Image (cartoon, rainbow, N blue to C red):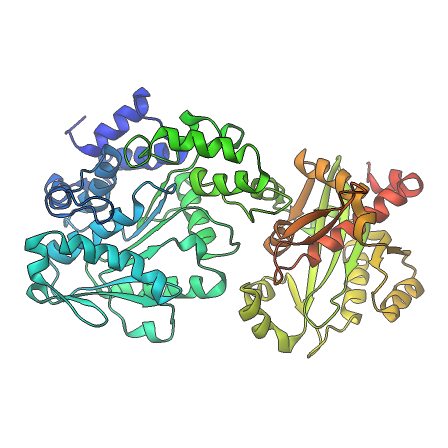
Length: 550
């Protein structure tokens, strides 16, 4: 050990087992330690300790108590990494800080302390510091926490002036301001620091675009920073998902990123979600800001309710869930993802399913192909040209991205042209030799589409929706949970699976699939279930062919 610092101290205690952390935290600190020893970057004890001393000597608690903050070892290690890891020119290495941590671990207070340090001691004159969120009242949470922190210290308060829309520190010509999403107006900003709070709740394309706008604006500064702190959430295809992908790729050694610094406090084993020792991995402040007994009480509640369990997994384990009332767990669907192409299934037999839009929005067509005992789903979506922008805004789903990826076919002007659905099945056969033996469809489907399919030679069958699907859904649940069903390169289809809830008839013990909320879509899931229904119904007839055995 070339020198003693909080990074090394924390990592030593992790390695010795004195401190319990998950695999991602072990990974990031190993990367840092290895980088220091290889002299890929350097450690400035002066800068690291300067930040820690400021926080512990000037930053006060702002709720429930007013004493000075005392940073725990894990917090000191993070602060040391953020401010102490530098290049040969003593410029900070990391620009994007991403911290995922359980509720009640003091994340907002920590963010406020980082703002305070940079606002008062950052050497750069004329700083712009922004607290960013989708709505102004959300952005104001960290901003107000910072102001309360400043007010609690006479020296800090004396230098700060609260104005109508910001806080101004005249000595350094620094402004601290809460802002809501407005990508167009953000172009003129020149931030030194952007704080993004609870970004797992940033829905749709707006969050992705806003983050990128603010990130690109950092370029004008010598050592700027964008700090994102969040607990896991329920929203799919968000900036949280994007940062999580980038972070895990970096931590696995699959990325050459240099400016990203992720601290992912997440449990490793979902089966141990109710184990206190496992929970420490997502809650490093257990025993400090939140008592162990609190978790014991919450576990007892969660064990008696599926929805409460989902909420617990999200809030305190940082295992992302789709909804507190959803049928399938997020991890189940995530584990079903497969990176393959249609090319891998040439000359295969398949079953198909169609869910046509009853109004004007989204149509889904699927094929399910069995290979080596595993079922693979390919789904193509269809959406009218004039509805893409509108539905993107109302649904909070980045449909334009899915169009670019080829997962959505723009079809018709205001209504889906069902000829495109017909053509997709024909294309599968002509281009890849994929022969769809049976196609299930809802009785409300357009008759002319069914006639076209029949006339071409496809065998179609009416699938009765509602509680009639109970046996198929029961079978399907076992298949996907056993790992024998895969969703091939389709995040939109994954989100539709995650949007499914089951409404049970207490008299018949049967159930039917419903949306978890009104604006959610399950069209893709329904099309797959239609395919699975005809597969189950006709398996005695065509099952051997569907196995696609060599």
